[in-house]
Image (tube, rainbow, N blue to C red; front, side, top):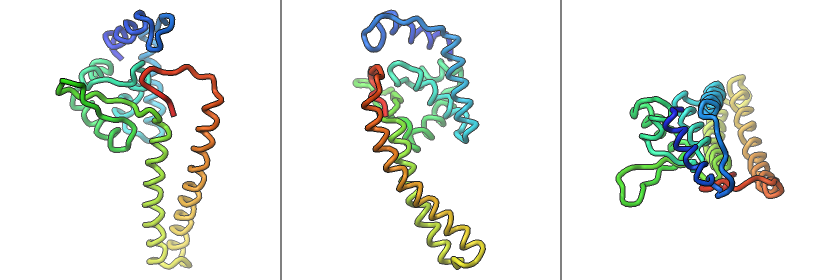
Length: 189
């Protein structure tokens, strides 16, 4: 994250912070290290590197919203790299694209319930995969080694779907019990 981007965050904090509370001082280098470390963790888990960096930068931004130019500056990457990353992130429903009123510039914003939205979109993928896998198992014959393997994979995805729905409902109930500060522009999952 660039010092100019970190200064933007510090300016917001000096003005009373996103929640209007007491100003909080941040170490710009520490923020940058966090963004890069979390991005690295997401990359290790299989996400594209630039998409991971853009997502982590948005997550660390008080507004959870930045323009392409702000992202490029913050991460010291090219506009083309930002474009590819946000296209991927919008495609997988991790980031939304908004038009600034009276402007031709897009802002990229984390969804209010980013983790819920992300997992809900995965549920749709699991449904499609399960359907295709069941068809494949029938095509190959469920009693053949390949058919049995594919049938087991379909059963696993069906199990994940049933568990995911209950898990997300329990998360919403649990979140209500947490004493978390509100994040301006971000309602959380």
